[in-house]
Structures are given as structure tokens and as C-alpha cells.
Length: 277
Figure 1: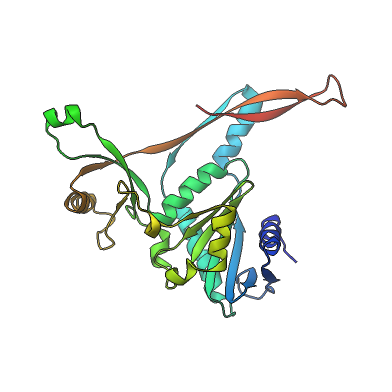
Figure 2: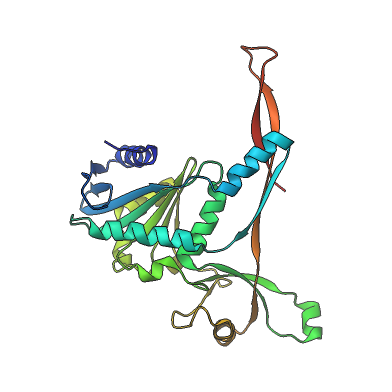
């Protein structure tokens, strides 16, 4: 039987879509949670869940005490999350069960799932936001303002060093995303797999190799990620634009509000409400 709420949710979703789900037995070493199959596809899946960040919890506490809580955080890849992904990939690798694909299933933290999702995609793909111009000539800039571009693989990223991890599933109530590892050893086969088709139907699939938008940039894999000049020159030579890294941030604001139930007139409770700027 599933031992956590997240494992139960994953199992229920898969079984509702006609997958066979077997809970793998515990052992003296950390291994994956489920062996899953449908038709000819076999998967090993490790399920983990994230708690809300301490800063997010403190914001809610401040809102309840003072009437307003705000939180500003930088949006960037996260070394701690990268470490978790690699640790869980090792558990999948240590699981003694033949399968076609290995997957990590991450349940997002309640209330803070959007921020976690945005950090996750930056960690998996080294995603960065760049501002770009084609010339520094002042007359040119008067008529051609800077453009914004998403760049994949701009920073160190988790997927590159994990060719045996087919993808990462992000799951939270009302949101399901499959992040495909384009550097997986069976990436082409995985794109035609049952679980890939499932997430195309019930949620979303993120896969850099299928992006057709010409404004999206990709940094070459041989470029040293710590060498800012080398990254700038690669993009200039490849795309003909001059770029600078944008600092991204996330703002959250919460104020308490009171509600009354029809069964207890005059009784009210305090609940946090998020305000979007």
C-alpha cells in the first residue's frame, strides 16, 4: 500500500487511466516506489513530495499576525533541488527491476506550488531569461528596443547528467506537467510511450526538443556554464544578438479575510488570501 498521500495520489491517477501499479517492497537500500506498466511499456517511478519553503510559511504567519504578509524571492535554478533530483535518480538506478523508462514524480508543495514549478523548470533545463539587442548603436536602439528571450541550458542543469532519467513529473491539485529529458538515452522512444501520451491528454508536456518558437534560444552544450563571456559570444555568433542576463523574481502577497458559515451565524474564521499584483 502507498505510504504517503503523494504516493496514493500517483497510484490513483495511474490506475484511473488503466495502468497496472505495483508498490515495490521496502529494502535495506533506498529504491523506487512503483513498478508501472501499460500495454508494452514498463516504468519504475519514484515519488517524492515537497513541503512549502520556510519563507512561505513565515509569510502566512506574518499575514495572520499583522494583517499582511509579503514575500519576494529570486527565480533561479536551485542547487538543493538539483541534489534531490540526483539522489532520487540514484534510487531509481538502484532498483532491481527491469523497465523501459525511469521517472521521478514530484508532488508540489501546497500553496507554494507555482514558485516551486518555476524553480524546478530552471533547475532541470538551466532556463534563463535574456534581454537582447542586435546593435548598441543609439540610433538603432531608438527604433528597435530590446527583446526578451528564454534560453535553455544557459546554466548548469540536472537533466544533462542523468541520461537514464526519462523525465520528471510535477503534480499538484489542478496541475500536471511532464518534463521530458531531451538527453535521456531513450528520449525518442519515451515521446511515443503511454505515459507521455497520458500527460498530453490530462495536463502538459514540456520538451525543449519540440519547441518551434524562433525567439527561444539554446546554449551549446560545449560552452562552459561558468564562463559568462563564452556564453555571450556563443549566442552572439549563433543568433546575431547581444544579450544580458535578467534577474527574475517572484512576488507573493497575502492578507487575511474572514468568512462566516450559514450554520454558525456570527462565527468567523481567518484564512489567508493571496493577492496578485
